[in-house]
Structures are given as C-alpha cells and as structure tokens.
Image 1: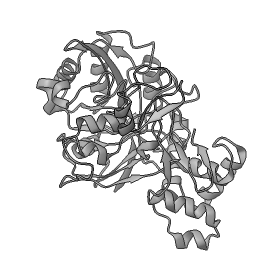
Image 2: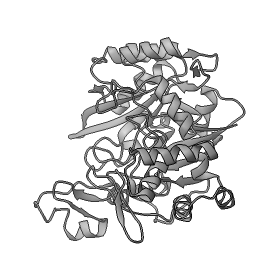
Image 3: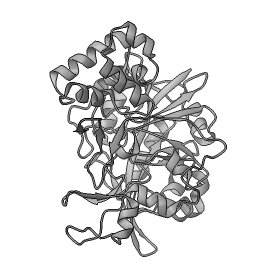
Length: 404
C-alpha cells in the first residue's frame, strides 16, 4: 500500500489562514490533489478540536476517518519562543498523537502553559528540550518533528533564531527526535550535508485547501496497513518511508539572502562579498537557507548518505497551467483546464509523477503543456530563487512569470 501524506496542516483558527478551511474542504481537495492521508492540524484549538470530534471517527489504529472514508492523523504545530545561551530562539515543532486519549493529555499539558484559543499555532515560552521531555513523559508514542527546519525565523537551523545542530537545540532529549521536515526552501540533498542522523520528511504547511497549497510537499509511505504505528515507525527508522515530494528549493520564500523592501537578493558568494550588508539600505541582509546550509555543512554539495531516500522536485500543476495560459492560478480558464485534465488523469499527483509521454500524446495534450509537465517532472524548470519572504519565479525560455 502506497500512501501519499501531507501531515502539516492548519485550521481556519490559525493566524494567516483561509477562513474557508473545513474538514470537508480539506478532504475534497486532498482527493483532487491525489493525497491519501492528512494531518488534522491544530488539534489543541478548542473549536477545531470540537469539529474534529464531531466529524471524524477514530479506529483502533489511531486513524481518524471522515464519513466518506478519508483518513486523518492527530496533528498540530506549536511555536516555542525562549532564550538559550543568551540568544532569542524561535522554533516550530510538529506534534503527532497516537489517539484521542493521548491528544487530550497533550492539550491538558499545553493549557497549563498558556492559552489555546487565540491561535491555531499557539506560542509557549518553553525550551525545546523541556517541551520534548514533558511531552514524551505523557507517551513515548507521541512524535515530535521540527517543522520547516531551515527557515530563518522559526526553523530549528534558522539563521535568525535557530541552532547549529540538533544536539545544541534538544540537548539531553536529542535521541527522541527522529526526523526533520525540510520546508519549501530546502530539500533532502541540502540537508544531507548537515550529517544529522535523522530521517527527512516533507509536508506542505498548508494555510488553505487549494491544490497549489495542499500537498505541494508531501511524504510517500509504503506499508501493508494504514496505522499510526506504521507511519511513525517509518518516520523513526526509514523502513516504509519511500520518498518525499519537494518543491524546488528556489521556489521557497527564504532560499537566497536579501531584502524584499529593497528588491534585492543575492547568492551566498555575493553575500560574502557584501559582508552580509544590503547595498540598498546598508542594513544586514536576511540570510536565507542556501547560505545557512553552507555555513553549517559538514559534507560537500554532492554528498549522498548510504541510505538516502529518493525525492521528487515538483511545482504544483496550477503553477504550470497559469504559465501555459499566461493567466493566474485562480482564473476560470486555469481552473477549467485543470478540471479537464483531472477528468482524464485521475488526480494531480498522478499526472505530475506518473502519466507517460505516450499517454499524453494519445490524449492529444498540447506539446507546450506536455513539455512543461515533463520538464517539471525531471527538474529542468529553472526558478529564480525566492528571498526574505518573496516566493521564487519560474524561468521560461522567453518569459519570466511570478509563481505567486
């Protein structure tokens, strides 16, 4: 059984998310995307928790099922802001619970540390070490994974408020961290260079249910039965973790260094020449993921570990169609073409990953669009790197079009 999972979701109660998010909409667009499993997102938020319990039914394997038989997993994301070694730290962590009973115990613990009703991604003044120690005392089956681990502001290894290693961050609790989440501005090949002995997973951090957000990054599992235990065993050991789906790292908002207000970006080499100072405003640049990797790397750029997992670099189909039509992702003609393709090819990820050139030709797919899909699959679409909160821009032979 192959399961494509997106296990970093937010509810409508989290800051900067779509107010139209519902479990029904998440399920609808997950099926359209080609996803087989979602995280619930924000399970500790009182109103969202109520909606989860009213609309999903838990089985004996820790999987929550909708009335239409789509599976979810107890999942949330929390923000820790604290001081360690004289520096302000901010780290986002994903938390997974094996069942409702344990989820409720996590909620009880979190409510003892602060309010849970003001944001779906609550903030606590707890160190990562203390948090892991306390949470794992509730149940060892709980899994904790650093989210978007390289982003400057809230990533474990972030240039602004992160750490230089897992050990520095989690200290005596490091052995209880089994995986890191790559985030949009990094991919496994970049993270291999850090030589941290953990698995690498990828999820979307979706703030809406639209298919250009949901499942834009995902993890592919393979096992005989869908259970919480099998999923977490794959994350902990790599057995059953088949591959990840990544956006090209350049597509992420923090790949290069720069200042968005100054409309300036630079690669690591240029940043060094500038001594980290923006030539426009003369203030320190926001240091992106590529520079941060270079500063932390223990291995060269071509390094591959012995047990590396494959990964696919894909732009969402809506991005390709908007480029092809010289339109926007939300336009009626983009949606019309998207829906017509799904009538033929089942779902988006099937088309992006598996449909052969021969099948596309058989179905009279336009050559330009076919080339875009195949170039995307092979990683040949070039992207001008994003920086300081600005998404990357895809580069075509005769044009440059903004992705977002």
